[in-house]
Amino acid sequence: MDTQFSQEANTSIEPKTWSQRFESALHPAIARFNASINFDIELIEYDITGSIAHAKMLAHTGIISPQEGEQLVAGLEQIRQEYRQGHFKPGLDAEDVHFAVERRLTEIAGDVGKKLHTARSRNDQVGTDTRLYLRDQIQQIRTQVREFQGVLLDLASFHVETLIPGYTHLQRAQPVSLAHHLLAYFEMLQRDFERLGEVYRRVNISPLGCGALAGTTFPIDRHYTAQLLGFEQPYANSLDGVSDRDFAIEFLSAASLIMVHLSRLSEEIILWSSQEFGFVKLKDSCATGSSIMPQKKNPDVPELVRGKTGRVFGHLQGMLVLLKGLPLAYNKDLQEDKEALFDSVKTVKACLEATTILLREGLEFRTTRLADAVAEDFSNATDVADYLAAKGVPFREAYNLVGKVVRTCLEADKLLKDLSLEEWKALHPAFEADIYPAIAPKQVVAARNSYGGTGFEQVRLALVAARSKLK
Image 1 (tube, rainbow, N blue to C red):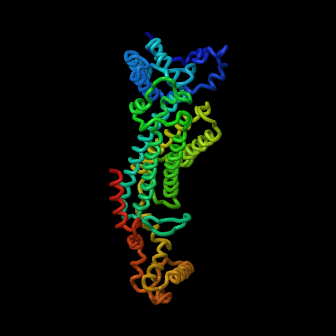
Image 2 (cartoon, one colour):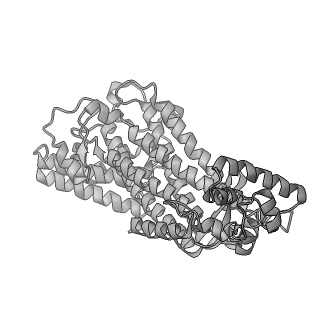
Image 3 (cartoon, rainbow, N blue to C red):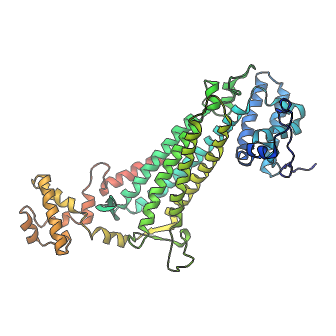
């Protein structure tokens, strides 16, 4: 017997399960337009898993005999193996993955295979498959998020006392610990991890048994199938069960925020790797060159992550528009949710993997350049105002005075550290020799020891807390 079950070369349109209602077959172009097999084949193992649970429930409730249930389960497991071994390759004439599996099951089990669809519609079937798929993918993405957070922590642990200019409005603001900067992304990813967990709980509800829209006359046990499939509970309303795609929108929202965070980091790496900043050096393993300018090294990984972010945003917007005008219950429009979900999942996973590799082994921070950067600007000006305030000068008065100091320095082409003690005292008698260590970059950072601040003591405490979150 030929073990290749491919219909890829079959151009005829086979009668469908609704054919007795119709006098003629679909136009070939409409059949192609209607088909989803080219992309929903992604769901085949989830479809088989859901169908096995349904078959067991049919036998459990006496709708079919135990022997028939065993035949259905054995046939479905055979299809799973045929697919994994590359022997089961349904083509366009199968229309969708659900029909392809059922048709192959009937070939294996005969008329018993035709009983699988008892008390079930493709509407609740596809909803079940999609939730099983997304539930699995969310767990995989959460694992990737944790790995990425681990890399951020490793880098941060190494750079607690490495300083980097902190920016507001992309203008030099105050120096910060590089570890503190990296831990900001750790916190963003922590929210992503938690948010995905919240989405998971709403994905983990079973529509199986809702039927086309109104339930079924058969004595099914929806709680039994939900338990078999690991769902927390079944949908309480059959109309909602087959038409709900809120969970997909919530996932795409969470995925979009992951991409926002990856894109923000990517933008910084792109800036940092430029000659204008020079804060990081890209290694050859994660950069490419120019086809015409031999001196260039391009930050392709962060640029691609930044670019791919728009794809996920687009899928979220598309899903919102898809749902906004749909009447209850199921509509064919909902077929369009699959490609958006599949592409978003693949994009997020690929971007997390690439960014993790980039940070772990694709770049190195140029610590000497960073040290020079924090020493060549006026980002310690606030510390001069704090110095005066600590000596009893009202802060607003001190703030205005420091503005005058900065202006004086700019006119003289000096930095604050270059002023003599006499010049300081001429500006205000409260200045003493201790102004110099007070405005040294490391002291400026160390002094910001408020909870959540960039002070080295706080950063070390934050690292401990972050490690405990990963555990």
